[in-house]
Image (tube, rainbow, N blue to C red; front, side, top):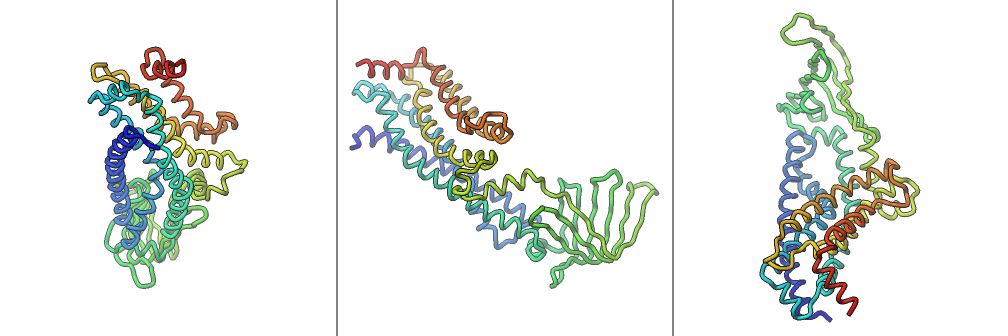
Length: 365
């Protein structure tokens, strides 16, 4: 049965968490929307698929957003309670640190379940659907649906400029212009007709041109190579095998990762499990990082909380990379960083921690 103090704490952290997660979602949606509209502008995505594509990206990334939102909400809530001397009042009424841990863990329990659903079910589903959309971009009909005639498009970090004056009903480009600045001698290709192709398995991209001319040379000089062609296949740089493999694993259902002997699959499974587990670890970290009294100087703990936040989430990717590359032994898994950060924070605060002193008094009493 929840006491009045439990309900009060749960109410406070719920309000703060709701405000923070809504703010972070608005920022994330804004960034993803800009990227999606950029794909539409570049012709890689049709206008009709914008909302569906955006929704899948939000579903994929929500799991990684909930743990930091909870950690910030816990620190803000405890900081406000300490500033208003409510933590001192709680202590005077016998509501010690163990009860605070209990209240925060009660909030963390349903949140970890929601985070687990996003990480273990929602994220791979969204990744799979996004891959289907990405592969569909390579189909000529889909690519042409996104491109607009009479506009210039940049690829390969601006080194390739593509232009088609018209797109006919047979999904073909007409009056094609391509400028390639990747080689020492820039290349200019003009063609009457052309079409775009992409291999869904290898990621290889190519533009097949017909009835055109090619010019190789440096502008401003007379040293130019000229050639005419009936059919010319122009290959674009394919995606790396590592990126393709990483996306493939991200789209695998969680049940297929369980029991796998592959380090890559185990790293992906550890990545998904880390999000719900992080909720509990961050709940245990937030309370000792809070200054009890407004008269105490909280600069040191505020700096430690800041470092803890960045160390926790940066070490996550580092631990996964080390595990994938075999740097860390397989028995360590990819969650060791959470225990390491938790131990370092408690050890650094142990000598003069009021919370730990209270816990010791409770145990001895």
